[in-house]
Image (cartoon, rainbow, N blue to C red; front, side, top):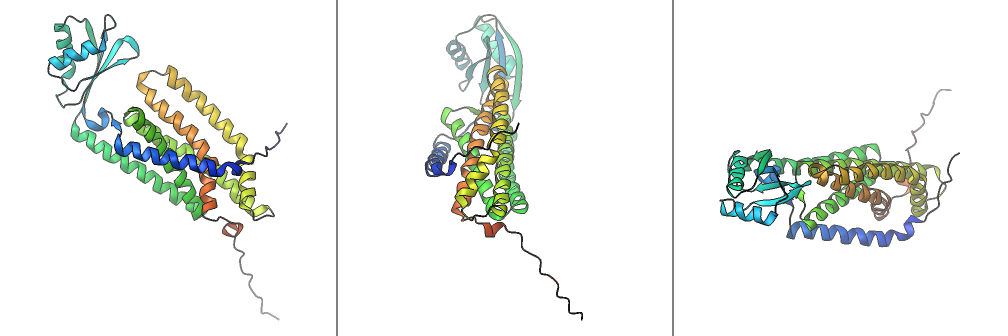
Length: 305
């Protein structure tokens, strides 16, 4: 049995939604400018050492020992189990940092085992940071070209505005809470672009179709009808995706925690932007039925008698 199409007046709240989006984007830009992103070792270079202690240690005591042992920039964090600890060393002190850290802690009386030691040079980290930024810009450019070719230029502007809106909010929240931004989070941001684009294309396709078949040139009615007609699909996709992401967020462990968090934020914001940001941009650009009508081919005049 087919469900009835809802008749929610989404466009009645477009001004409030627009204000919320503007405030969120401006705040995100301000946070990125003031706080910046807390780049992980993938982008900054340095060493990461994961240790397992015989008993749950006091993190402050571990940090004090490392500072006194020649690691002044050591960052000590709990990682999963109470006995597991991750130590991040910003300086490039060679791949043997794990052995040096273990030696310092064992000399202080800790029973500790090395689980993982990673090292990234500063030059490699800087190159990854530049390539990651270029990758984001390239993805947005390709999206704009695709949507302009697939639909119409105004739709491409709406899609890119929505994607920039989603990416900035994700990055702004990471800057606000000082969460580590590494290659896994960058991959999540790129996935958010793909997810948000898919939602925007579904709504845009229905808007284009309705402009052509509905006997009205009222953009607000076309937008409302189009959103309502795609609402069940949008919510079903978003909710099932969020269920998986929430499972990863709370049960997936520390290694993919920030990845799952970035995707969770991105899916939620992307669903909102496909409803309000895309449509608001189209309304600001005065989208109309004339923009989407297929031009009729001129009929050839038969001059034969």
